Length: 319
Image (cartoon, rainbow, N blue to C red):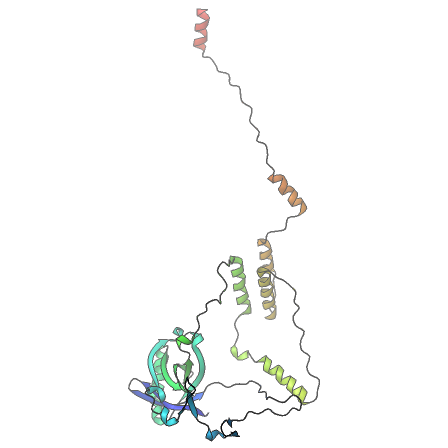
């Protein structure tokens, strides 16, 4: 692999000579620009404005354009005078747990190759101390004409470097989330969790770029003068599903795709929790039951006071 940067890792007073190589490669199907009328290639040429002629790559340098339009040439010798230690050094500044790095900051990935025999031992030392501490190293280096923040981590038995965006390059997610006031029912959350379980996990090695494969089939058919493959019909639209129904159907579809027998428990449970639409008979009973009823006042009982026997005898004697 061709190195894109040569220098050293600065780990305290330890220096590790390394080479930086790309860790990724693009498998995108390349297209060329053509003139649609005759199919000829469209090419871009580097032309000097003053001389009005095409120039070679060797004749091209770099310059900074000032605000007033002044062009200030910048040579490699000028850049060699940058007052920065990171032009030829990956300067480790800290060690952090990996979960402290926001995935939004991750940019490009590279491998660090030990450069020479004397780099083997300090390279291995840094790799093993990162493994033991379960940490990543945060460093700075100049790459691609600018100083970059980067992260060093262990991948198998190699050191990998990820260039990171600076924190002030990450936009805050203001205005992205929906307005407050959305209420979720426990049943909706439970079904969403069931759907996650039904979809299950996946080995990333099993995932492929289906668009690229389909594009290659179209190109191969056209090159051979054959009929182009038929595009699949789009999924039938027009169905408006409420969130609960969509979740239930998604769970059943996910289970079927995994070859599982789909029981109707999800639908049954949901149906039991859904309020049933009242029938005419139900409405009639409901209307009767809601009509005000007259309260029956219990009849007053006439109580007869019993006169004690002694008082009745006294009244008789007096008479």
